[in-house]
Image (tube, rainbow, N blue to C red):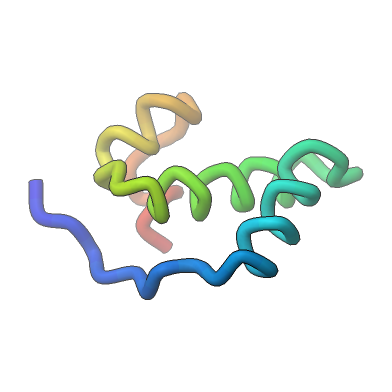
Length: 61
């Protein structure tokens, strides 16, 4: 599966997203932060959707 281009995250961006993933009050925020972190690690949209147990289109938005 073709990957979407995502610019590499900076260290401050990674820290912010990691904090949101671990401490975010809303589930949607935690899930979105996790998806972005996984994408930055090189996972494909299909892999991310499987990890998060959501439909592919929920990840590719």
